[in-house]
Length: 246
Image 1 (cartoon, rainbow, N blue to C red):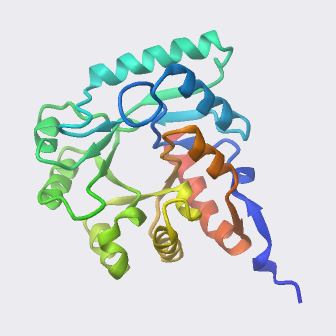
Image 2 (image 1 turned 90 degrees about the vertical axis):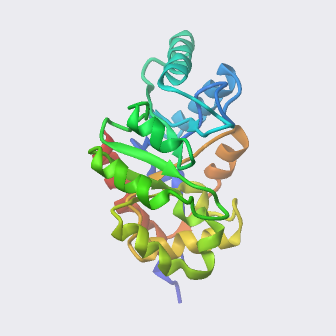
């Protein structure tokens, strides 16, 4: 007997008009696109399935990617010029950042050198292996500054995989959860996919994004297929992402 929920869908067929709020397509400033040419290749790939709006979020990470609003805006200007040269003026790109909660974060926040999304939200992350020592205090300071913290890819933090219900503590702190599209496949591993589906079924995700760094990831993203049940769970997250960042 045919099972309605077993029908498979390519996820990209449901991303027309999507706004990608977390990606590393700005050239030459972190572990994402290395050149303008790579950035353009990624953008063209997204354009093929109807994604034309991007908020670029390069890392701000002490000792690794010490980006500032100045370095990020410089890279953004470079890419915007390249869009014009490649007849891609219909592509809309803005810039924010993905902030690592490390020993330097609170200083950046107090100096107003953070890069919010849409002036309201702040994308944050921590180590995949353990919680940042100052995570709780940093979140409180973000909220006190009038920003809404978005926790990047909670499904990828390995130390939480054995107790996924502990994520509820972060929700209680006021964190919004952003899921990576690739987590719906086994690109990052089986445990990440299992965590993503558990959090999705628990209605804990607020936003969806690509977190794309390179062309090989985009190729993997295009191959993602999900069943009808998962599609029904992810659609409201897609719609909420578009609604909040359009």
